[in-house]
Image 1 (cartoon, helix red, strand yellow):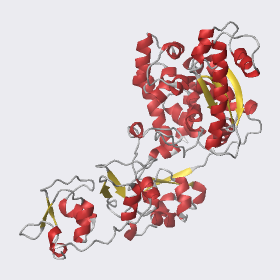
Image 2 (image 1 turned 180 degrees about the horizontal axis):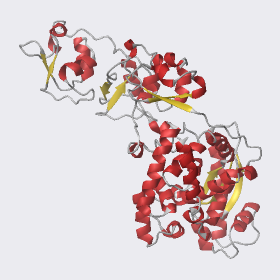
Image 3 (image 1 turned 120 degrees about the vertical axis):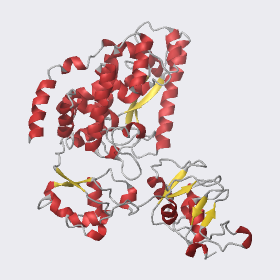
Image 4 (image 1 turned 90 degrees about the vertical axis):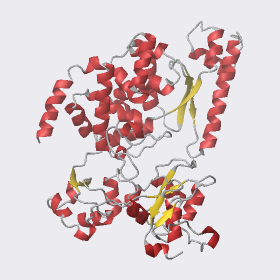
Length: 505
C-alpha cells in the first residue's frame, strides 16, 4: 500500500515536465509519421518499399502471401525492390516523359524538381520495412499485464512515464522475445548489459522475467540520462549505447537529436539506431491514442503475484509439489529459470523468489515452502558437467557421445546457432552418461605415481576423459581436487584419484 501511495505522488510530480523531456524536431517528423504508419496501418503480411535516408519517400506497399514460406516472401520483396531500383535508374538518366506506371509512381514519391543525381543516389537506399500493426496490437493487449508495474518503477526512479512504451519498440511487449544478436526478453537486454543489473547465466536469466527486467531497464535508462543529460540521447543510447551517442554528439557538435540523425554517419550508427528515437515517439503516439488506432482493443489485466524466496537449493518438482502446481504451470510464472532447472540438471537456487499468483495460494505463502521436505533441501547447487570442445567436434557428435540431443545442448548453453569453436567449454546436462569406455590397453595405460593416488595429466586429457577412464564422475574429480568444473588441465599437472578407482585399470 505504501509503495502504491508513493507511486501516485511520484507520477503527479513527474508528469509536469513530460512534454519538454521528449522534443520533436521538425526534421524527425517524417520519420515519426513513417513509423506511426508501420505500427498502425500495415501488418506483418505487408510492408513498405521506401527510401532509407528520407522516410517521407514511400514508393509502394507490398502485400505478402500469409501462408507462404520466408523464401517465397523474400523473393517477392526482392522483385519489388528491383522494380523500384530500375525506375530510379531510368529517372537518374534524365528521362521524365513517357514513363511507365512504376517510374511515374517513383517520380511522384519525391518532391518536384528532384535532380537526376539524387535519383542515382537513391538507388542505393531502396529498403523494405515489414509492417507491425498486428504485433503492435498484440503488444498493446499484453502490455496491460505489466504497464502498472512499469509505471510504478519509473515513478520510483523519478523517470518520465512516457518510457513505459519502450517495450513496444523493443519486443512488442513479448517477454519471450529473442533477437538474432542474442538480445532477450521484453526489454531486449544483451547478455553483457544485462549482467550489469541482474543475473544472466545458464541457470537463471533474469532478462526473461518482465518484472526484474523492468527494474533493470529503469536503472539503465536512469544511468543513460545521467551520462547524456538528454532524454532523446538516453533513449537512443538504449539501442546504440551511451558511448556511441556521446561520440555522435561530439562529432556533429550538438546534442540535438535532429542534428545528430541528419549529420552523423558513424559506421555503427545504422538504420535502427538512427530511427530509434523517432520510432519511440511513434510508439508513444499510437499507445496513447490506442482507441483511435485499434478500436475494440481488449487489454489484459495485471496478475497479483506472491514472491516466495527459497531458503535452500530445491529440485523444481519439489517446489511445484509444495505449491500444489504442476511443473509446466510453475514454469509459466517463472520464466527466468532456465532449462537446466526444468530438466532437473540444476536445483532452483537458494534465495530465488519463486513467483506464484496469489489467487493460487489459499494461505500464507511461507506456509507452502515449509511443506518442502528436508530431504529436498540442499546446501549446494548441482555442479556443472562440462566438455572442452576438440578440433573436429560438432554439436551432433558431442550430443551423441553424452546421450543427449543437440537441442538440449543449445538450450543449456544459451546457443542460437550450431557453430562451436575448439578450445571452448560446453556445459552438459547433469544426468547424462558418456558412451561406455573401451578397455584400456597396456600401451594406453594412464600415467600414475608410485603412491597409487595421483594421476599425471597428459596432453589431450580432459576432466571428462579422465573420469571416463577411471569410471568415476566429473563431480568426484572436482571434489577430490578442489577444482572448478571448468578447470583447464595442463600436461604434467597431478590429479588425486581414490585408490579403488585406480585399482580398476
